[in-house]
Image (cartoon, rainbow, N blue to C red; front, side, top):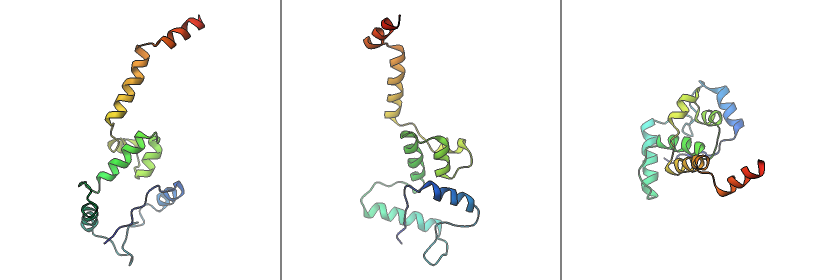
Length: 127
């Protein structure tokens, strides 16, 4: 069973899905019957194996999505909407700080505490 995984869902679709929340499943078989959650995970595992990709859980893609949205500056509210969360606290559980993000933050803070020659010159000009 091959699953269609959609990326970059337009905001209009997200709004429509919010209006339809609670009406039923949005991922169904072509005959409109439900997939068994275990079969979806098995299909994903087979997809990884077939394409010689490392094993991850299907659910890990939600964490990856949340982390990439954090990494690339998507606001918490937008990320929360895309992940289908009703509050920002849940979204934060899906967003993880990566090593390069931590280094970037440290570099920004270092600029505050370690003035450069350029900053010293600018201070002189202001005075």
